[in-house]
Length: 144
Image (tube, helix red, strand yellow):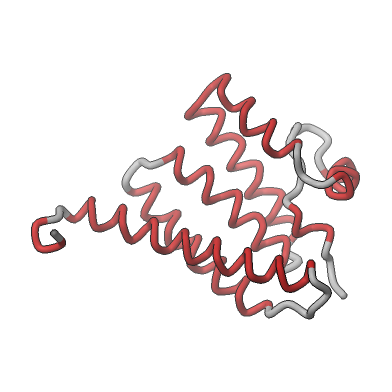
């Protein structure tokens, strides 16, 4: 019942809603460009704003594991918006936060990123000299 929920519970719910909406916009944009259509960059801009707001809530509530996942999606939004330095920086933050939260279990996250398409991995070798993670799939769609 919302009337009896604490402020932190409401903030957690808001964070989930913001993250889900951001993920949905990124997924829609990805589908558009994968199918050869010109993507609506407004979706990525909206996703970026939603994710940034969710992150501020997650950090305030010390939900660092959740924030690490949100950072991955934010990196995708940065990539789609051709903000490649921000995408790299955001992925580094996600990896660092994942390692801090999960220690050796961070290897699971690295395994997931290793499943990204090979064309993304090839591009990532140019940019990630000191980090073992790869770029999100958005990077392969620089501009059309």
